[in-house]
Length: 470
Image (cartoon, rainbow, N blue to C red):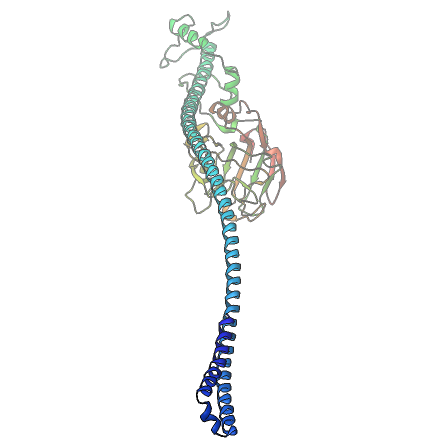
């Protein structure tokens, strides 16, 4: 780029000299006439003007050269920068291509994994639906089994009640037959037969068809465990043949004739100090429970018969009646706040009564027996529940905390005898035998023999029979 400027400078310098020489040659004779110094002065002036013009042109050329040099430098720097930028762009494109390749690979793997997960989820869904169907079928089967068991239990209890009544009838008929046979015996020589009063119908002879038929029917029935005489002596006391002119009637059963019941506890007044602790309590969880006892109350309400408390709940098992409740009613509590109200109005007559409260977690069934009679029953009461072990079990007071928190309005006033507990549901035959003093059901987990702490004014006495208990 510098060579054109140099050519232009030389052209501007030599063109004026050439023109000046040409002019001087044409006017040579005339110029020689002028003085030499004028021509020299003019030449000097021309040279100076030419020098100024040349200098001006050279400065313009120099400035243009500097500008072009700067532009070249800038172009070179821009070219270098563009090359560096292109290199960076290429590197970025390469890195982006690599990342895109990795991303595509990861996407393919993720797609494969998602398909695997989808297939697994579908398989799990099918398995869960199949299991849910199986569980639904199992629930239906269990419900059917429960209904069948419930109906079987009801049928069994009805059969047992019927059998108990039949046994009672058979035993009483056997006692009557023995009495009649004693009356109908032929007198020995030297003795006279008892004279029957005119108003009394003549008893049948031993050979009468009616008596023979009665004997055959009684012999065909299963014999009771106790003999008729023992049964009569045990339940009804000693009978004597009726005198002349009297009608033979069966005396009512009296609970006072029940013997061998063990110790009795007497709670004389409604004091919070009158409490009895049973130890040990429940050693394992209970899914069924039977509580039976002879009870005689001396107040207008029953109060608390039994209370079982744990750290979790102070009303895990309670049989209590406050003075604010209806007379003769108690609350049967299992795991507060669930409870059932039980009617015990017959206990307010001040006499001995046998009470059995039975519960099972199967269908939540419960039964209340008073003097061998079923007076209350129900279901869906704490179904599937388990009474936990390790709590505090007391008699005569209701616990608001473990082993304490008593209230005199909930205290029991009266007597308790023959109390026992089982971790199973007693059947009606066992309840009947227990209430009549015939047989004590096996497997009792707690009795009054476990009364380790008797506090306050509670008295512990040993009675041979209930009629002798204070």
